[in-house]
Amino acid sequence: MVTFFLLIIYLAFISLGLPDSLLGVAWPAMQPDIGAAFESAGLLSMVVTGGTIVSSLVSGSLIERYGTGIVTFVSCLLTASALLGFSFAPSLFWLILLAIPLGLGAGAVDSGLNNYVANHYKAHHMSWLHCFWGVGATLGPIIMSYSMGTNDAWREGYYTVSLLQFVLVFILLLTLPLWRIVAGKHQPQGMEEIHTRNETTNRDEATAHKHGKPLQIKGVKFTLMAFLFYCGVEMTVGLWGASFLVGTRDLPLETAAVWVSMYYGGITVGRFITGFVTLKFNNLTLIRAGQMTAIAGAILLLLPLHPYLSLMGLIVIGLGLAPIFPCLLHETPARFGRAHSSRIMGYQMAVAYTGTTILPPLFGIVAAQISIGLFPVVILLFAVMMLLSSEKVNRILYKNGKSAVD
Picture 1 (spheres, rainbow, N blue to C red):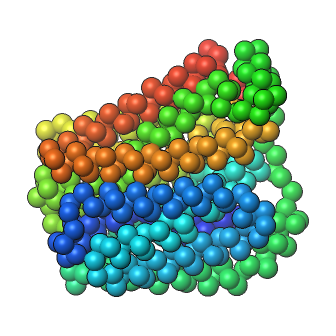
Picture 2 (picture 1 turned 90 degrees about the horizontal axis):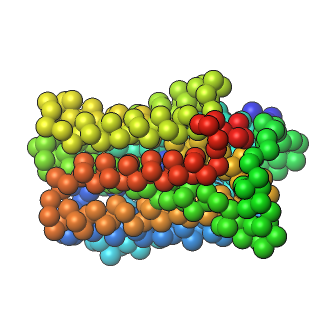
């Protein structure tokens, strides 16, 4: 029963991933069709993410009142309905309106499920959870690429994805009673025992607990910065990668969509592999290795190499990003204490969505005013900032290169 319950959570994350990669892939075809400005994709992304932030902030109270199953079902229903609306939207105005329920549907379950898995399951389950998000994010561009390649119709791509979402909604509806039954029987799997950290960090935690201010714990603010720039990399590549390939590499729309799909495929495959690797290596090692790999991918994309070697940079970036987000999330209770993990998890998700909201649209404005050719430079900058922020946390919380809480 516990395993089946986990599969339902995985299923919910497929539904979260399906729409996330559609806009960037479809935008080169959508923009002239609806007569929108180039940078309007950034505006749509901001509206979607704004809704996600709002629903994430209220997700805790919603889940406490209605239960995780109901909240997940309603959220997926909102997302499916919004995607169906996208396929019929006649103008940018309607797309902006539909982006609101699309964002609201995506955010309500995210923080709650991440915190649940971080506290009750081992690290490999967190990686596989986000691997299933990658399954959805990978399928989205493939579906859109096929639709645009055969019928030159981005609307059909959105329509197809909406139908898949409704299938997931139906499955969630059928399994609603199981959420209560399994949740009642489920006992926490137990995390590894958190070891005593250094005295400075202990004093910081005690002070934060006394005053009810987890942000006072040393390392929290730099961790939030790492989440900000992680999402800056991931979503900027997803939103503008196809436009970069079309605008600077002269690739056809459907070919560019395939390469972006391979980028998300790199994230998905990487997270599946990470689930096994966590049995051997700790989160700290995997986070650092992923960040260095993402930087290497950005450099490949930037250098004047053979086009295919350059395009391989997208896949390398995806592979590098794979372990970072789930491992950072899973480290939260170990780094900052289980008593603070729920609130800090909420802060992390809110800052992550803020990065998604601000950084990709900001690049869209820069690209419209200067050149889409700046894409690799900006990706490299974000990746380096993510590494520096994360390493600052490591210097604060860890000794001699080894986690004090492994």
